[in-house]
Image: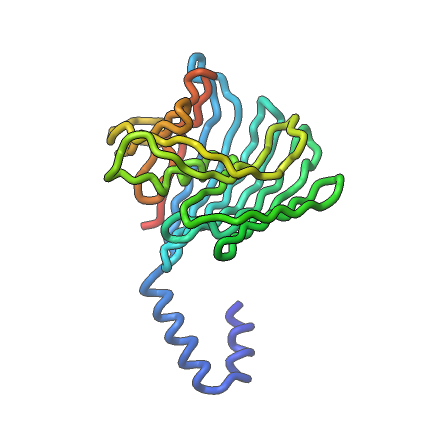
Length: 248
């Protein structure tokens, strides 16, 4: 990589060299931060193993975030590969998802948001489809790896409290879905239940406790909205942080 930059600099004007040196100095002052971890999918009652999710989050100098995740949902024989980017306020920028079911590629979708327009390009073995939707400032995208599910509450107003409405572009990933990887705008409820301290296999964390859709409990770290525990008690299913580390 350095040899490539060297070749370019030999051909570039001197002012370009000064510009690159300034950019390098700025990059050193504002390094990219990262957080990474692993979720274990399991039942609540018997802790029966259901799958794993490995993820890494990069926080860029402008405050935007990029999450990369790989999911192996063993009990359903479903795999995901995902990259999702959001702005500093968690408004979606783009998301890319590849979906496999029982060893066969189900397809992929690439969601891009430009101003007030969301465009989703879906590729499946049956062909290509494109969705276009008008969107507002406050909405989220749910590709379904657990690592970005905490972002769904990003526009909740803690000062108002109570049960609030949120708009979510929910991508269909159910193995039997008649429209795989198509998304739909859905209204859902979010309620803040309080600040708590919880201990999971990855450690002890100060978290905010939310209720999504009146049925899913989510305990998350406030700054990057990373889920520590995510539980559907009516289904005896939970997604629990079992490994966690972050940049110095």
